Image (cartoon, rainbow, N blue to C red; front, side, top):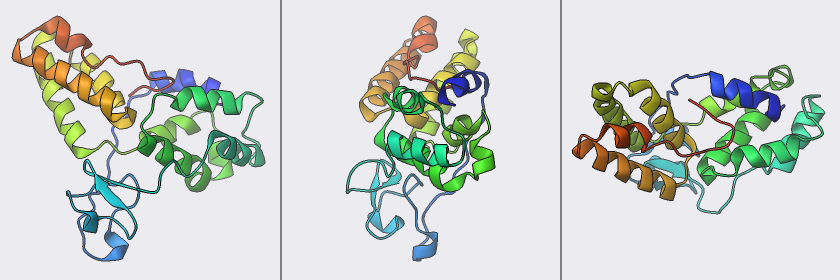
Length: 201
């Protein structure tokens, strides 16, 4: 399933919209992966606001690849290589993105939806892009228009913004800003081109 989806992932490009979590009441506070406004109070009880996103301070993703694939198998949507394909897909991803991806596959999709070839792409697209990263990408894309590279930069930047680890994001965004400041089209075109297994915006 993941292997088949890799082709679909490379072909699709959809934007992700996420509701900001600023309300004071628990019902409207942010869940894991949802935006927050710099305060832990913007997130549900037990969560913290990290870099504009509500996160679980207790550690790792809710579901491992083995647990994801066990669920998919129960839905007749797994494959013999599911665990390996899953690990390859998420190996370069931020913990926040891995958690959101697993929750979507295990909790949010019906078994009928899980059996579709595009199920991993659907869950990938539901991973929210932190607001600060989305803003940076928009600025880099605007600069890339003068270099005839807007679509390439948009796809690369949004992919990295959606699932990239913080260190990879920091390095790429600094390189992009430097290239923009220097009006370096080659640098703008390639600064966010960071290999991430099995995904594409």
